[in-house]
Length: 631
Image 1 (spheres, rainbow, N blue to C red):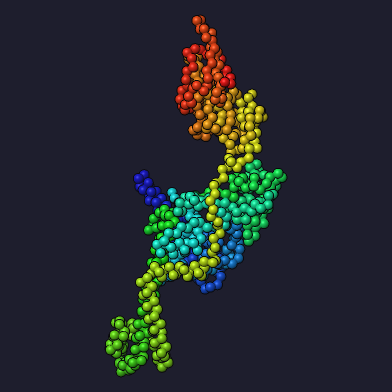
Image 2: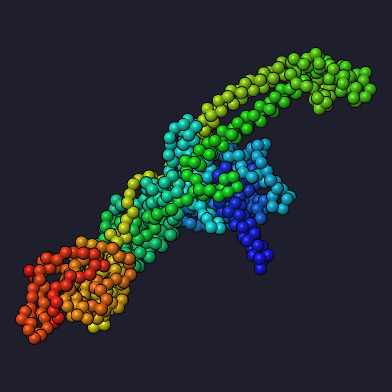
């Protein structure tokens, strides 16, 4: 059994680790989940500037992704609809209506210019073997953008989940510039569907946000939904409005969807109902308003960690500097190698070093002759001449030697030296260089990504406040049933969201939602809305001594649907009142030598205590009856 348990433990941990790292949670470095990274890597491999059939892209991506073509196709469509890194051709569905994309064989895609410019550089990318060992795939892409926050992400893994909402790419680039300049800059979510958002509780990516549809309320008899809240489609909005109308929460005469390129849902109101009376109900009872809880969990250093938006931006800014530095150093090395080769070529041809090999008969002698011929020019070359350098020189054709242009060669070498100076300057001021890079991106692409979601402050609409009290709460004393579907005496009007305090004849009480039909008691003492300032005065009798007691209390604390009692055990309620200045008239049971058979007590003379406190004994006499009159 221990062996089997060990196998289960190991396998479960391996499975959990795989799901967390390789499927559900994005990586902080490039912001992508593995399937997204593999799709973009595949598009980069086959990129020729033309559109490719998505079916072909999916097939090629399966070399890297072991989870089937359906998951790749769905992820590609979702990524393309973010409108950042993939250009679309064909029907990729509609993010507003929720309509699905066409089959992958009918649609085409290619990398966007932004993706080509900011996501790839194979020379500084770390690669690992693919799942079957036949190919190599990137660990992370050398992304120069804060992709994680631009795209957002949602994933559920074993024992953890992530919910990252998208942000505006222009604002993210501005925030990175501010970070590199040691300035403060906050960023907030921005959704492709537009709408309103209240980010007062965003908590830097680990709180919640309230989102709302944008309503056109100019017409008093109709409401037009122009923009959607994040996470909704026109169909889900319409369904929620129709459901609310069926339940009587809002009154409409019809609803029509005219959405094409822009959202336009017309809600026509019922006779006698006006726009201003319906807006709060739409927000309260439909998907026109919702609350989104966010949690920014990412993979960093091979482990899942929770980060804030500010920490992610700081990490991406630091990584941008590292990537740009790596690219500059790589270019510097390549230019130095090119300059070295050009210098050797110039000396080899201009000084006719090739003449020194005419009498040599062995390969080794030829190499030695060239190296010896180059020695007088060591101060110019500044590097050791290697056999590989000699081999490259000896491959120069006679035609090229005869047509060698000294001036053109010198100009090329001057251009290389100029670029090397620029690189050295950039490396010396790498932060300023990174800021300049981001500013160029903003100038080139910023106008393509305006903010779509308007940030405002609003309070979430309470459904109880928005609900109309159009239901009659009735009580049938013959059957003991209470509810708005009961035949009996009407008590008062309620909505489905009202909470009701019910006190039964036994002294037991509870707070409940306004019921459809509920048995409470054939002798209900009280039924009403919750009022924490109301004082309940209860006269009760001790069943052993028969003495009368008075208890005054407020019902301020309770748990919904939980039962409580106003009086101690083995006691009986005689009267209950909410009057504050009444008189309690108690009649005692006649007994020998008992002269006073009736007494009056002013309710206001007794203190209001807690619900768990005992009552005050009014007399050491056996009670016969109680009446309560106005003072």
